[in-house]
Image (cartoon, rainbow, N blue to C red; front, side, top):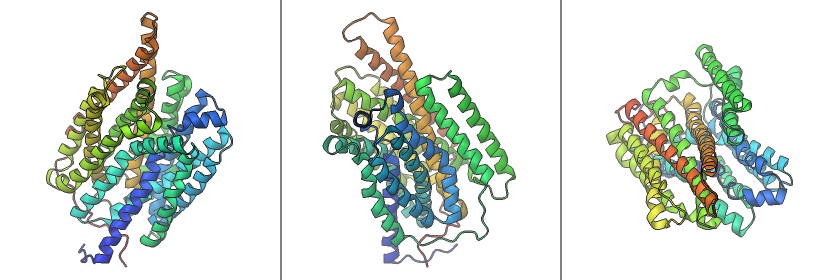
Length: 488
Protein backbone atom coordinates (compact mmCIF):
# COMPACT_ATOMS: atom_id res chain seq x y z
CA UNK A 1 0.00 0.00 0.00
CA UNK A 2 1.39 3.40 -0.98
CA UNK A 3 1.04 6.07 1.70
CA UNK A 4 0.06 9.52 0.50
CA UNK A 5 2.08 12.45 1.84
CA UNK A 6 0.68 13.66 5.14
CA UNK A 7 -0.40 17.28 5.21
CA UNK A 8 0.37 19.49 8.18
CA UNK A 9 -3.29 19.58 9.26
CA UNK A 10 -3.60 15.81 9.03
CA UNK A 11 -0.37 15.39 10.99
CA UNK A 12 -1.53 17.68 13.80
CA UNK A 13 -4.88 15.91 13.79
CA UNK A 14 -3.15 12.55 14.31
CA UNK A 15 -1.41 13.85 17.42
CA UNK A 16 -4.71 15.20 18.70
CA UNK A 17 -6.12 11.69 18.24
CA UNK A 18 -3.21 10.41 20.34
CA UNK A 19 -4.16 12.87 23.08
CA UNK A 20 -7.79 11.76 22.80
CA UNK A 21 -7.17 8.02 23.06
CA UNK A 22 -4.57 8.53 25.81
CA UNK A 23 -7.14 10.47 27.83
CA UNK A 24 -9.73 7.74 27.32
CA UNK A 25 -7.26 5.01 28.30
CA UNK A 26 -6.03 6.96 31.33
CA UNK A 27 -9.61 7.20 32.59
CA UNK A 28 -10.10 3.45 32.23
CA UNK A 29 -6.79 2.46 33.84
CA UNK A 30 -6.78 4.88 36.76
CA UNK A 31 -10.34 3.86 37.65
CA UNK A 32 -8.89 0.53 38.76
CA UNK A 33 -6.94 2.23 41.58
CA UNK A 34 -8.44 5.71 42.11
CA UNK A 35 -11.17 4.22 44.29
CA UNK A 36 -8.76 2.21 46.46
CA UNK A 37 -7.66 5.12 48.63
CA UNK A 38 -11.28 6.32 48.90
CA UNK A 39 -12.54 2.97 50.21
CA UNK A 40 -12.20 3.73 53.96
CA UNK A 41 -14.20 6.96 53.53
CA UNK A 42 -16.83 5.28 51.36
CA UNK A 43 -17.12 2.47 53.90
CA UNK A 44 -17.80 4.91 56.71
CA UNK A 45 -20.36 6.79 54.62
CA UNK A 46 -22.31 3.75 53.37
CA UNK A 47 -21.73 1.41 56.32
CA UNK A 48 -20.62 -1.77 54.55
CA UNK A 49 -18.41 -4.42 56.15
CA UNK A 50 -14.72 -5.19 55.69
CA UNK A 51 -15.72 -8.42 53.94
CA UNK A 52 -17.79 -6.51 51.38
CA UNK A 53 -15.16 -3.84 50.80
CA UNK A 54 -13.29 -5.74 48.08
CA UNK A 55 -16.37 -5.84 45.84
CA UNK A 56 -16.14 -2.12 45.12
CA UNK A 57 -12.91 -2.89 43.26
CA UNK A 58 -13.75 -6.41 42.10
CA UNK A 59 -17.09 -5.47 40.49
CA UNK A 60 -15.24 -3.17 38.09
CA UNK A 61 -12.54 -5.75 37.35
CA UNK A 62 -15.06 -8.55 36.76
CA UNK A 63 -17.08 -6.62 34.20
CA UNK A 64 -14.05 -5.03 32.57
CA UNK A 65 -11.99 -8.20 32.25
CA UNK A 66 -14.90 -10.46 31.34
CA UNK A 67 -16.35 -8.24 28.60
CA UNK A 68 -13.16 -7.00 26.92
CA UNK A 69 -13.12 -9.57 24.07
CA UNK A 70 -16.76 -8.78 23.32
CA UNK A 71 -16.05 -5.05 23.49
CA UNK A 72 -13.13 -5.43 21.11
CA UNK A 73 -15.14 -7.37 18.56
CA UNK A 74 -18.02 -4.90 18.76
CA UNK A 75 -15.51 -2.22 17.84
CA UNK A 76 -14.66 -4.18 14.69
CA UNK A 77 -18.33 -4.74 13.82
CA UNK A 78 -19.81 -1.35 14.73
CA UNK A 79 -16.79 0.83 14.01
CA UNK A 80 -14.26 2.38 16.36
CA UNK A 81 -15.87 5.82 16.50
CA UNK A 82 -19.38 4.55 17.25
CA UNK A 83 -18.11 2.12 19.88
CA UNK A 84 -15.95 4.76 21.55
CA UNK A 85 -18.86 7.21 21.67
CA UNK A 86 -21.16 4.65 23.27
CA UNK A 87 -18.48 3.68 25.77
CA UNK A 88 -17.58 7.24 26.79
CA UNK A 89 -21.21 8.40 27.07
CA UNK A 90 -22.17 5.38 29.15
CA UNK A 91 -19.07 5.57 31.34
CA UNK A 92 -19.61 9.23 32.19
CA UNK A 93 -23.31 8.77 32.96
CA UNK A 94 -22.70 5.74 35.17
CA UNK A 95 -19.82 7.50 36.96
CA UNK A 96 -22.22 10.28 37.93
CA UNK A 97 -24.68 7.71 39.29
CA UNK A 98 -21.89 5.92 41.18
CA UNK A 99 -20.83 9.18 42.82
CA UNK A 100 -24.39 9.65 44.09
CA UNK A 101 -24.54 6.13 45.61
CA UNK A 102 -26.59 5.88 48.80
CA UNK A 103 -26.00 2.19 49.52
CA UNK A 104 -23.42 -0.56 49.10
CA UNK A 105 -25.56 -2.34 46.49
CA UNK A 106 -25.95 0.88 44.48
CA UNK A 107 -22.20 1.46 44.44
CA UNK A 108 -21.34 -2.12 43.46
CA UNK A 109 -23.90 -2.17 40.63
CA UNK A 110 -22.65 1.10 39.15
CA UNK A 111 -19.03 0.01 39.45
CA UNK A 112 -19.89 -3.11 37.45
CA UNK A 113 -21.58 -0.98 34.77
CA UNK A 114 -18.49 1.25 34.69
CA UNK A 115 -16.43 -1.85 33.92
CA UNK A 116 -18.83 -2.87 31.13
CA UNK A 117 -18.52 0.50 29.38
CA UNK A 118 -14.73 0.50 29.98
CA UNK A 119 -14.63 -2.77 28.01
CA UNK A 120 -15.95 -0.79 25.02
CA UNK A 121 -13.59 2.18 25.49
CA UNK A 122 -10.20 0.50 25.96
CA UNK A 123 -10.00 -1.65 22.78
CA UNK A 124 -11.65 1.02 20.61
CA UNK A 125 -9.12 3.63 21.78
CA UNK A 126 -6.08 1.43 21.18
CA UNK A 127 -7.50 0.28 17.84
CA UNK A 128 -7.94 3.90 16.74
CA UNK A 129 -4.32 4.61 17.69
CA UNK A 130 -3.07 1.50 15.90
CA UNK A 131 -4.79 2.38 12.62
CA UNK A 132 -3.99 6.11 12.80
CA UNK A 133 -0.20 5.77 13.20
CA UNK A 134 1.06 3.47 10.46
CA UNK A 135 4.56 4.82 9.77
CA UNK A 136 7.23 3.19 12.00
CA UNK A 137 8.82 6.42 13.27
CA UNK A 138 5.63 8.17 14.33
CA UNK A 139 4.12 4.89 15.50
CA UNK A 140 7.05 4.39 17.86
CA UNK A 141 6.59 7.85 19.38
CA UNK A 142 2.81 7.45 19.66
CA UNK A 143 2.96 4.06 21.33
CA UNK A 144 5.72 5.25 23.63
CA UNK A 145 3.45 7.99 24.94
CA UNK A 146 0.47 5.66 25.08
CA UNK A 147 2.52 3.01 26.89
CA UNK A 148 3.60 5.59 29.44
CA UNK A 149 -0.06 6.42 30.12
CA UNK A 150 -1.01 2.77 30.55
CA UNK A 151 2.07 1.90 32.60
CA UNK A 152 1.64 4.80 35.00
CA UNK A 153 -2.16 5.04 35.04
CA UNK A 154 -2.56 2.96 38.19
CA UNK A 155 -0.05 5.11 40.08
CA UNK A 156 -1.74 8.27 38.81
CA UNK A 157 -4.97 6.82 40.20
CA UNK A 158 -3.43 6.47 43.64
CA UNK A 159 -2.22 10.09 43.60
CA UNK A 160 -5.49 11.44 42.27
CA UNK A 161 -7.51 9.34 44.71
CA UNK A 162 -5.49 10.68 47.60
CA UNK A 163 -5.92 14.30 46.55
CA UNK A 164 -9.65 14.01 45.89
CA UNK A 165 -10.37 12.06 49.07
CA UNK A 166 -8.35 14.33 51.34
CA UNK A 167 -9.44 17.69 49.93
CA UNK A 168 -12.93 17.05 48.49
CA UNK A 169 -14.80 13.77 49.05
CA UNK A 170 -14.54 10.10 48.19
CA UNK A 171 -17.43 10.69 45.77
CA UNK A 172 -15.15 12.84 43.62
CA UNK A 173 -13.08 9.75 42.86
CA UNK A 174 -16.10 8.82 40.73
CA UNK A 175 -17.22 12.27 39.61
CA UNK A 176 -13.73 12.95 38.23
CA UNK A 177 -14.56 10.65 35.31
CA UNK A 178 -16.95 13.31 34.03
CA UNK A 179 -14.05 15.76 33.84
CA UNK A 180 -12.14 13.24 31.70
CA UNK A 181 -14.96 11.60 29.72
CA UNK A 182 -16.78 14.69 28.47
CA UNK A 183 -13.74 16.23 26.68
CA UNK A 184 -12.91 12.76 25.28
CA UNK A 185 -16.50 12.46 24.04
CA UNK A 186 -16.40 15.77 22.15
CA UNK A 187 -12.91 14.98 20.89
CA UNK A 188 -14.13 11.69 19.45
CA UNK A 189 -16.95 13.47 17.61
CA UNK A 190 -14.59 16.08 16.18
CA UNK A 191 -11.51 14.01 15.35
CA UNK A 192 -12.50 10.48 14.36
CA UNK A 193 -14.20 9.57 11.11
CA UNK A 194 -16.61 6.67 10.89
CA UNK A 195 -14.51 3.74 9.71
CA UNK A 196 -15.85 1.23 7.23
CA UNK A 197 -17.20 -2.04 8.57
CA UNK A 198 -18.18 -5.25 6.82
CA UNK A 199 -21.80 -4.92 5.63
CA UNK A 200 -22.76 -8.46 6.60
CA UNK A 201 -20.55 -8.84 9.66
CA UNK A 202 -22.09 -11.02 12.37
CA UNK A 203 -21.28 -11.40 16.04
CA UNK A 204 -20.03 -14.77 17.20
CA UNK A 205 -22.56 -15.13 20.03
CA UNK A 206 -21.41 -18.58 21.29
CA UNK A 207 -17.83 -17.30 21.29
CA UNK A 208 -18.84 -14.10 23.09
CA UNK A 209 -20.71 -16.01 25.80
CA UNK A 210 -17.96 -18.58 26.42
CA UNK A 211 -15.14 -16.00 26.36
CA UNK A 212 -16.90 -13.52 28.64
CA UNK A 213 -18.17 -16.29 30.91
CA UNK A 214 -14.74 -17.91 31.12
CA UNK A 215 -12.92 -14.68 31.91
CA UNK A 216 -15.62 -13.70 34.40
CA UNK A 217 -15.25 -17.05 36.19
CA UNK A 218 -11.44 -16.76 36.29
CA UNK A 219 -11.45 -13.20 37.64
CA UNK A 220 -14.15 -14.09 40.19
CA UNK A 221 -12.25 -17.20 41.27
CA UNK A 222 -9.01 -15.31 41.81
CA UNK A 223 -10.82 -12.48 43.59
CA UNK A 224 -12.71 -14.93 45.82
CA UNK A 225 -9.41 -16.55 46.82
CA UNK A 226 -8.48 -13.35 48.65
CA UNK A 227 -11.24 -13.86 51.22
CA UNK A 228 -11.98 -17.60 51.16
CA UNK A 229 -8.58 -19.10 50.29
CA UNK A 230 -7.35 -21.14 47.33
CA UNK A 231 -8.77 -24.44 48.57
CA UNK A 232 -12.33 -23.16 49.01
CA UNK A 233 -14.88 -25.02 46.91
CA UNK A 234 -16.16 -21.79 45.35
CA UNK A 235 -12.65 -20.68 44.39
CA UNK A 236 -11.72 -24.03 42.82
CA UNK A 237 -15.10 -24.35 41.16
CA UNK A 238 -15.02 -20.97 39.44
CA UNK A 239 -11.42 -21.42 38.31
CA UNK A 240 -12.28 -24.84 36.86
CA UNK A 241 -15.36 -23.44 35.10
CA UNK A 242 -13.28 -20.58 33.73
CA UNK A 243 -10.69 -22.94 32.23
CA UNK A 244 -13.41 -25.19 30.81
CA UNK A 245 -15.31 -22.31 29.18
CA UNK A 246 -12.14 -20.86 27.65
CA UNK A 247 -11.28 -24.32 26.27
CA UNK A 248 -14.73 -24.48 24.67
CA UNK A 249 -14.19 -20.93 23.38
CA UNK A 250 -10.98 -21.95 21.55
CA UNK A 251 -12.80 -24.91 20.03
CA UNK A 252 -15.59 -22.63 18.80
CA UNK A 253 -13.08 -20.21 17.30
CA UNK A 254 -11.52 -23.00 15.24
CA UNK A 255 -14.87 -23.76 13.55
CA UNK A 256 -16.62 -20.38 13.45
CA UNK A 257 -16.97 -18.50 10.14
CA UNK A 258 -17.10 -15.18 12.01
CA UNK A 259 -14.94 -15.85 15.09
CA UNK A 260 -14.93 -13.45 18.02
CA UNK A 261 -11.14 -13.87 18.22
CA UNK A 262 -9.62 -15.03 14.94
CA UNK A 263 -6.83 -17.40 15.92
CA UNK A 264 -4.65 -15.81 13.22
CA UNK A 265 -4.25 -12.92 15.67
CA UNK A 266 -2.21 -15.23 17.90
CA UNK A 267 -0.35 -16.96 15.06
CA UNK A 268 2.46 -14.38 15.07
CA UNK A 269 5.13 -15.36 17.59
CA UNK A 270 5.97 -11.82 18.65
CA UNK A 271 2.34 -10.80 19.03
CA UNK A 272 1.42 -13.79 21.20
CA UNK A 273 4.55 -13.30 23.33
CA UNK A 274 3.70 -9.61 23.75
CA UNK A 275 0.31 -10.51 25.23
CA UNK A 276 2.13 -12.78 27.68
CA UNK A 277 4.52 -9.95 28.59
CA UNK A 278 1.62 -7.59 29.34
CA UNK A 279 -0.07 -10.26 31.48
CA UNK A 280 3.10 -10.89 33.51
CA UNK A 281 3.81 -7.18 33.96
CA UNK A 282 0.22 -6.59 35.08
CA UNK A 283 0.37 -9.41 37.62
CA UNK A 284 3.59 -8.10 39.14
CA UNK A 285 3.03 -4.35 39.18
CA UNK A 286 -0.47 -4.32 40.69
CA UNK A 287 0.98 -6.05 43.71
CA UNK A 288 3.47 -3.21 44.04
CA UNK A 289 0.73 -0.61 44.24
CA UNK A 290 -1.35 -2.67 46.66
CA UNK A 291 1.27 -3.60 49.24
CA UNK A 292 3.49 -0.54 48.97
CA UNK A 293 0.40 1.62 49.49
CA UNK A 294 -0.47 -0.27 52.67
CA UNK A 295 3.16 -0.13 53.81
CA UNK A 296 3.44 3.63 53.27
CA UNK A 297 0.16 4.43 55.01
CA UNK A 298 -0.04 1.85 57.80
CA UNK A 299 3.63 1.26 58.61
CA UNK A 300 5.22 4.64 57.85
CA UNK A 301 2.12 6.74 58.53
CA UNK A 302 1.92 8.54 55.18
CA UNK A 303 -1.25 10.51 54.39
CA UNK A 304 -3.21 9.60 51.22
CA UNK A 305 -1.73 12.59 49.36
CA UNK A 306 1.84 11.87 50.49
CA UNK A 307 1.28 8.25 49.53
CA UNK A 308 0.32 9.29 46.02
CA UNK A 309 3.23 11.73 45.71
CA UNK A 310 5.64 8.95 46.67
CA UNK A 311 4.82 7.21 43.38
CA UNK A 312 5.60 10.25 41.19
CA UNK A 313 9.25 9.23 40.51
CA UNK A 314 8.00 5.85 39.36
CA UNK A 315 5.56 7.54 36.96
CA UNK A 316 8.41 9.69 35.60
CA UNK A 317 10.56 6.60 35.05
CA UNK A 318 7.74 4.82 33.21
CA UNK A 319 7.21 7.80 30.91
CA UNK A 320 10.90 8.27 30.18
CA UNK A 321 11.63 4.65 29.29
CA UNK A 322 8.33 4.13 27.43
CA UNK A 323 8.91 7.01 25.04
CA UNK A 324 12.62 6.39 24.51
CA UNK A 325 12.24 2.62 24.09
CA UNK A 326 9.58 2.92 21.41
CA UNK A 327 10.90 5.92 19.47
CA UNK A 328 14.64 5.23 19.63
CA UNK A 329 15.26 1.54 20.32
CA UNK A 330 12.43 -0.72 19.18
CA UNK A 331 13.00 -0.34 15.44
CA UNK A 332 16.74 -1.02 15.89
CA UNK A 333 16.76 -3.78 18.48
CA UNK A 334 13.37 -5.44 18.24
CA UNK A 335 11.14 -6.25 21.22
CA UNK A 336 13.11 -9.09 22.82
CA UNK A 337 16.04 -7.22 24.44
CA UNK A 338 13.83 -4.33 25.58
CA UNK A 339 11.08 -6.40 27.18
CA UNK A 340 13.54 -8.87 28.71
CA UNK A 341 15.63 -6.05 30.20
CA UNK A 342 12.47 -4.39 31.51
CA UNK A 343 11.36 -7.55 33.28
CA UNK A 344 14.83 -7.96 34.81
CA UNK A 345 14.94 -4.35 36.03
CA UNK A 346 11.50 -4.69 37.63
CA UNK A 347 12.61 -7.93 39.32
CA UNK A 348 15.62 -6.18 40.86
CA UNK A 349 13.42 -3.30 42.02
CA UNK A 350 11.00 -5.70 43.68
CA UNK A 351 13.90 -7.49 45.38
CA UNK A 352 15.07 -4.14 46.81
CA UNK A 353 11.64 -3.65 48.41
CA UNK A 354 12.15 -6.83 50.46
CA UNK A 355 14.76 -4.90 52.50
CA UNK A 356 12.18 -2.48 53.91
CA UNK A 357 11.89 -2.26 57.68
CA UNK A 358 9.54 -0.59 60.13
CA UNK A 359 11.41 2.72 59.88
CA UNK A 360 12.57 2.95 56.26
CA UNK A 361 13.86 6.18 54.70
CA UNK A 362 12.09 7.07 51.45
CA UNK A 363 15.10 8.42 49.53
CA UNK A 364 17.44 5.60 50.55
CA UNK A 365 15.19 2.54 50.79
CA UNK A 366 12.10 3.14 48.61
CA UNK A 367 13.03 5.57 45.81
CA UNK A 368 15.71 3.38 44.11
CA UNK A 369 13.27 0.46 43.94
CA UNK A 370 10.49 2.61 42.49
CA UNK A 371 12.80 4.02 39.83
CA UNK A 372 13.92 0.53 38.77
CA UNK A 373 10.37 -0.82 38.70
CA UNK A 374 9.13 2.20 36.73
CA UNK A 375 11.94 1.94 34.21
CA UNK A 376 11.26 -1.77 33.83
CA UNK A 377 7.52 -1.35 33.31
CA UNK A 378 8.16 1.34 30.69
CA UNK A 379 10.52 -0.97 28.79
CA UNK A 380 7.90 -3.72 28.83
CA UNK A 381 4.54 -2.05 28.24
CA UNK A 382 5.14 0.31 25.31
CA UNK A 383 7.13 -2.13 23.10
CA UNK A 384 4.74 -4.98 23.98
CA UNK A 385 1.63 -2.97 23.03
CA UNK A 386 3.25 -1.74 19.83
CA UNK A 387 4.30 -5.25 18.85
CA UNK A 388 0.94 -6.77 19.79
CA UNK A 389 -0.95 -4.46 17.42
CA UNK A 390 1.58 -4.10 14.57
CA UNK A 391 0.78 -5.66 11.20
CA UNK A 392 -2.77 -6.55 12.18
CA UNK A 393 -5.61 -6.47 9.66
CA UNK A 394 -7.87 -3.44 10.07
CA UNK A 395 -10.86 -5.73 10.66
CA UNK A 396 -9.04 -7.45 13.53
CA UNK A 397 -7.59 -4.35 15.19
CA UNK A 398 -10.37 -4.17 17.79
CA UNK A 399 -9.93 -7.70 19.08
CA UNK A 400 -6.12 -7.44 18.95
CA UNK A 401 -6.34 -4.29 21.05
CA UNK A 402 -8.85 -5.90 23.41
CA UNK A 403 -6.42 -8.75 24.05
CA UNK A 404 -3.79 -6.26 25.24
CA UNK A 405 -6.20 -4.86 27.82
CA UNK A 406 -7.50 -8.32 28.70
CA UNK A 407 -3.95 -9.53 29.36
CA UNK A 408 -3.25 -6.59 31.66
CA UNK A 409 -6.56 -6.90 33.52
CA UNK A 410 -6.41 -10.67 34.00
CA UNK A 411 -2.75 -10.42 34.97
CA UNK A 412 -3.58 -7.76 37.55
CA UNK A 413 -6.43 -9.83 38.98
CA UNK A 414 -4.30 -12.96 39.21
CA UNK A 415 -1.38 -11.08 40.72
CA UNK A 416 -3.47 -9.23 43.29
CA UNK A 417 -5.27 -12.39 44.41
CA UNK A 418 -2.11 -14.50 44.54
CA UNK A 419 0.00 -11.91 46.36
CA UNK A 420 -2.75 -11.00 48.82
CA UNK A 421 -3.32 -14.65 49.71
CA UNK A 422 0.41 -15.32 50.17
CA UNK A 423 0.89 -12.15 52.24
CA UNK A 424 -2.07 -12.95 54.49
CA UNK A 425 -0.88 -16.53 55.01
CA UNK A 426 2.66 -15.38 55.77
CA UNK A 427 1.38 -12.82 58.30
CA UNK A 428 -0.76 -15.46 60.06
CA UNK A 429 2.14 -17.91 60.13
CA UNK A 430 4.45 -15.28 61.63
CA UNK A 431 1.94 -14.49 64.37
CA UNK A 432 1.54 -18.18 65.18
CA UNK A 433 5.27 -18.93 65.45
CA UNK A 434 6.57 -15.88 67.33
CA UNK A 435 6.18 -14.79 70.91
CA UNK A 436 3.81 -12.01 71.81
CA UNK A 437 5.22 -8.50 71.95
CA UNK A 438 4.31 -4.90 71.45
CA UNK A 439 5.53 -4.76 67.85
CA UNK A 440 4.54 -8.31 66.91
CA UNK A 441 1.62 -7.29 64.68
CA UNK A 442 3.74 -4.72 62.84
CA UNK A 443 6.55 -7.24 62.25
CA UNK A 444 4.07 -9.89 61.11
CA UNK A 445 2.46 -7.50 58.63
CA UNK A 446 5.87 -6.45 57.32
CA UNK A 447 6.79 -10.11 56.89
CA UNK A 448 3.67 -10.57 54.76
CA UNK A 449 4.65 -7.61 52.58
CA UNK A 450 8.16 -9.03 52.18
CA UNK A 451 6.79 -12.37 50.97
CA UNK A 452 4.61 -10.51 48.44
CA UNK A 453 7.58 -8.47 47.18
CA UNK A 454 9.75 -11.59 46.81
CA UNK A 455 6.93 -13.28 44.88
CA UNK A 456 6.59 -10.26 42.58
CA UNK A 457 10.36 -10.33 42.01
CA UNK A 458 10.05 -13.99 41.06
CA UNK A 459 7.19 -13.26 38.66
CA UNK A 460 9.23 -10.62 36.86
CA UNK A 461 12.32 -12.85 36.79
CA UNK A 462 10.23 -15.64 35.24
CA UNK A 463 8.90 -13.08 32.76
CA UNK A 464 12.45 -12.12 31.77
CA UNK A 465 13.30 -15.76 31.09
CA UNK A 466 10.10 -16.52 29.14
CA UNK A 467 10.23 -13.36 27.05
CA UNK A 468 13.92 -13.91 26.31
CA UNK A 469 13.10 -17.38 25.01
CA UNK A 470 9.80 -16.73 23.23
CA UNK A 471 10.12 -13.30 21.63
CA UNK A 472 11.67 -13.10 18.20
CA UNK A 473 14.56 -10.81 17.37
CA UNK A 474 12.99 -9.08 14.37
CA UNK A 475 11.98 -5.45 14.64
CA UNK A 476 8.40 -4.23 14.54
CA UNK A 477 7.08 -3.94 11.00
CA UNK A 478 4.76 -1.19 9.78
CA UNK A 479 1.09 -1.92 9.34
CA UNK A 480 1.03 -3.23 5.82
CA UNK A 481 -2.68 -2.95 5.24
CA UNK A 482 -3.95 -0.61 7.90
CA UNK A 483 -6.40 2.06 6.84
CA UNK A 484 -5.83 5.39 8.61
CA UNK A 485 -8.77 6.67 10.61
CA UNK A 486 -8.73 10.20 9.31
CA UNK A 487 -8.28 10.14 5.55
CA UNK A 488 -11.15 11.12 3.27
